[in-house]
Image (cartoon, rainbow, N blue to C red):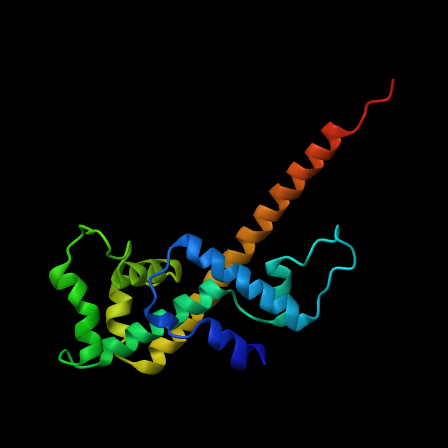
Length: 183
């Protein structure tokens, strides 16, 4: 149910989104809440801590929201690459390069779709030359994006473990410093 309805409603049209880090964070929070609800997690006491996002993802077998968005954006980019130059979706997304340059005017997005695509390629460890050649073949491109998503998720899990261990160490130090010393 989560994959079929809830997640699709949350991420509808995400292949064309240009997201910043804070927006990924907001989507992550919402996705975590939905996962906790689907798992059936409830706090018994107000002092109970909910499952972490990484633990919830491992329990449900899902990938992170950021990975899903990046994967869909790359697959959509491959689809656009295989289209003819005069097709409307390709022309619209290329328009930012023709008219825009790097200077952001008031009211324009902080990030272009192409800069998000470059970030996605970098995050999935796909070189620009590899993108140019593999995106022409749909099956090879889908396989390469899937491998890149696995690499990104493993790096994400490692980063989450590192952040959690430093957070636990800080909390232990804080508890040790607040304990009263015996006379």
